[in-house]
Image (cartoon, rainbow, N blue to C red; front, side, top):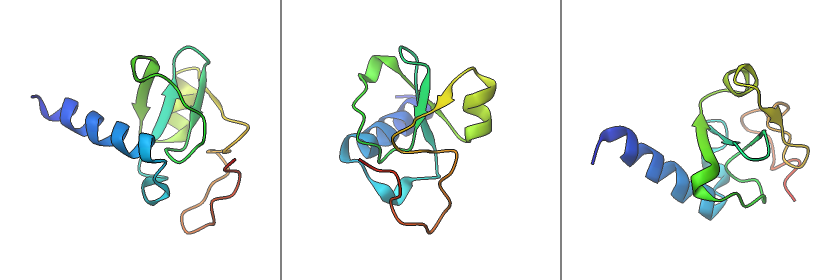
Length: 85
């Protein structure tokens, strides 16, 4: 399995777990809704609709907007799980 696929599988596993420990390491961009979220967001996209990006700037440059639920563009490392629903 190519390394990129392995990394994506690990990222997806963190999304399924809603793991706040990886918040900020990557973001989840959802093609069907046009939003991007933190991995710990309570939103549940289908895997086939997900693309992983490394920064909010990258997501926004690709045409995605920040999730209003988890506010990934406002989240700072070390902060509490603000905005998680």
